Length: 156
Image (tube, rainbow, N blue to C red):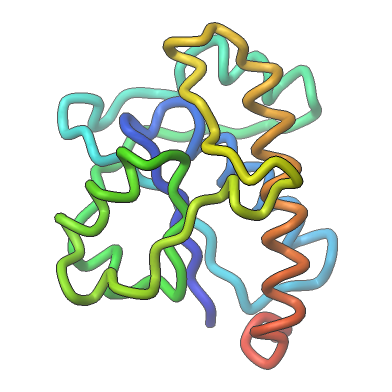
């Protein structure tokens, strides 16, 4: 089983969107050996539902997804095959939380897009649709990467 953990700041916008998108991609493509989860680095959002504008974008794009924020722990990092973060701030937070176990496991989801840019926080930009599109593109690129590099683990 290959565990992928998507991480953003609060786990109420970007990382739950990525979890929903990638979970569906895995199911539709037969990648049954992939466990998908999402976490946030900000303790104060723990237990909150997906932020309403992010939930609306998911619903408008055909995703029926219920999620409550969970804070990232060192165990999450230890258990993950890869931790995919949304931006540089998340990257450094995961390295602090995960310690030595995080070395080599943390990648930016945006690295799997054509632009290679960070996936900006729609909490600040207000553009949830653009964020969703970037996440979807990143998940598609990441799925290609997984199939090319971890095929033995991801197909059950």
